[in-house]
Length: 307
View 1 (cartoon, rainbow, N blue to C red):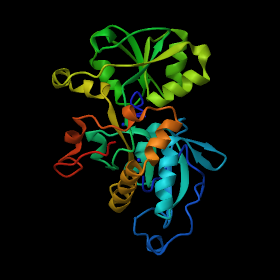
View 2 (cartoon, rainbow, N blue to C red):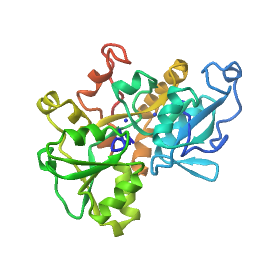
View 3 (cartoon, rainbow, N blue to C red):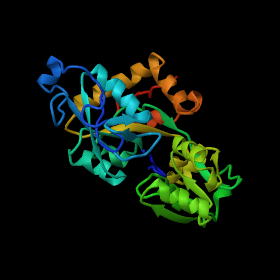
View 4 (cartoon, one colour):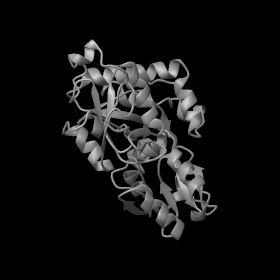
């Protein structure tokens, strides 16, 4: 969720709540010798405590099973690490807080990387990227930042899009505790545009045609526009990541390695297609992304995974 709109904001081992697969919801196999000594520093040896909020198609639960694209990515990586998943359901702010207070081992669900968040936790390499999608009232057309001027727009409290909307001249910001509020006010005509995660917009448009909104993609702001207004950075494609406590660096490294392997062997491409995404949109890093993290929480010269 950057959930940025939600977010503001993934293949080795992950943890925390709302879409989690219940205790051991993912069949990760028997715990190995490594986990017996808790080499990854998790709260419970051999177990990933995963904080989530129900946020399909990114995270959710069916009984005790974790579902959604982030859940499937995490399950794949955790299985390679012989880690079981134990969910902890909360809201978005609770997800971030659980990591920063080390009450969970990992949180997932379209979370956007930001410099501020990385100061209080560890981010994995991006499992996928999130293009700048909008849910627009009716058949509205808002292709550029300039076309958003003066509109009433909504997103979820805490998402990176809050600052972006505030930076649009004459815009009117409405924030909501969850995406349902955004979609409800969009359908009722109280806002014209909702900034939310792209797969969520597509998913909800299919499930709720009665709300009569469309999915649109914003033309990303130019380098010059972002230089003039830093908050416009989040109107560009952004890096999603899994978020892990600072006390668990070995876990972050293991999951990041797993994510890169999923890019290399085609598993990530298969999952993106399964959830209605275009791999060219979701799995190709934008040119400026490496520079955001290089020298911050990655070594100089770091390059994000990409097709």
